[in-house]
Amino acid sequence: MAANAAALTPALQGRVEALNHDGWGVIRSGKVVFVAGALPGEDIEYRIRRRQRGHDEGELLRVISPSPERVQPRCAHFGQCGGCALQHLSSDSQLRIKDDMLRETLRRVGKVEPQHWLPPLAGDPWGYRRRARLGARYVFAKGRSLVGFRERLSSHVAALNRCEVLTPGVGAMLAELSALVTSLSIPERIPQVEVAVGDAATVLVLRILSPITAEDRAKLAAFGEQHRVHWLLQPGGPDSLESLDGPAPQLYYDLPSADVRLNFEPADFIQVNGDMNRRLVDRVIELLDIGARDAVLDLYCGLGNFTLPIARRAAQAFGIEGEAGLVARAAANAVFNGIGNARFAAADLSGPEAAQRCVTLARQQRESWSQVLLDPPRVGAADVLQAVAQLAPRRVVYVSCNPASLARDLGILVTAHGFTLREAGIVDMFPHTSHVESVAVLDGPEKRKR
Ligand SMILES: C[S@@+](CC[C@H](N)C(=O)[O-])C[C@H]1O[C@@H](n2cnc3c(N)ncnc32)[C@H](O)[C@@H]1O
Image (cartoon, rainbow, N blue to C red):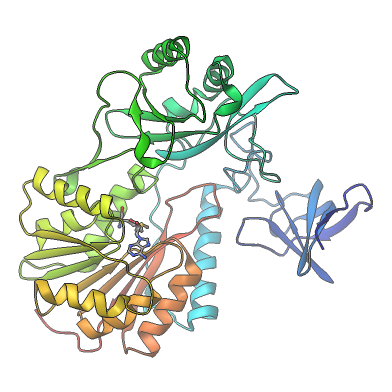
């Protein structure tokens, strides 16, 4: 049953014991209740707003005894906007809670414990988000369009004036962006504005379900000039992008420590947090422990974000990725950077044939691979673990955006394939959200000396 019961339930009191995976407080008084905005250790007043089979959802009415870790959220929209879940928790406490969550999940799901815990990798927790898909919705009752993230407790678009986690230029323009969309001739036919921020240019992709007028184009162009953003229009599927006005700028980001520039397209996967990505790439390179004679296989390689810095150090790097467009961009990025020892292939790394496909592709390049890097999507890398075992690298580094699939896969590598879990730790890629990015390092069963 899922019914809105807010009007029916009286105010209740309870002690918050933990945070769940969405960053909501957990109360265990009989049936478990999740309460957004409540922190561990706090006594709160709440009421049930939704009943579900396994748990109820509560609405926070009052914090009776605040946690010493509670801070004033920087953003005026925190609580209403679903973009952030943890702004009411100090940054140090966010790191500690994510670190605890990783430790607990590795133990519970994977039955593994690293020999050494890596210190959290963290940077500036504000103004970091360089990719976003903002919803747009015309609200007839208000006669205006809203542009922003979805609300925390509904699928409606939150009315945002600014955002503290988007890169500063974009975060500051949200009110004007909403006004701009409202002023167009088809505000109710615009469902989305996608944001892609490179080191030297920002692109906004306007999804349009009907054609726009010459006057609309002029308004968009004026906004673009004022805010130094370039507009792309998307009238259909992802391949229908057209530049509003003149050639679109080439988006790119630099990885200075590897002397690598990654060119990308607005809809491409890039790590959301540019500063943390630079730190993560450096850490991964260090953890891979690459020597000049090593050959490194990079699975789920995207644009070559890790492959190209790896190739700067290794004898050979080979990236495999499922999206053909990303593979083409990765290969072009190798040429652009003058890197001749990186190769790429497009292949699906999921399904029953994935492991064999992966081994065949890798062995077509060379017989043995000294290191393997895995950076899979949320579902993890279960289908290629057999391939990793078969290729017998001396080191595996696993970058993960989901502790549960990471723990499962580490458990398999350790228990079924004899790897040793050497190190693990969190990477604060998504401050103020409940997402937990992490990195783990394993040694192969027959660790070979270089
Ligand atoms: C977390 S991203 C990492 C990308 C890259 N390592 C980076 O740092 O930019 C995961 C990548 O896995 C790719 N991917 C998702 N499912 C896949 C599959 N079944 N087979 C191969 N690649 C897949 C996505 O296209 C994406 O590029």
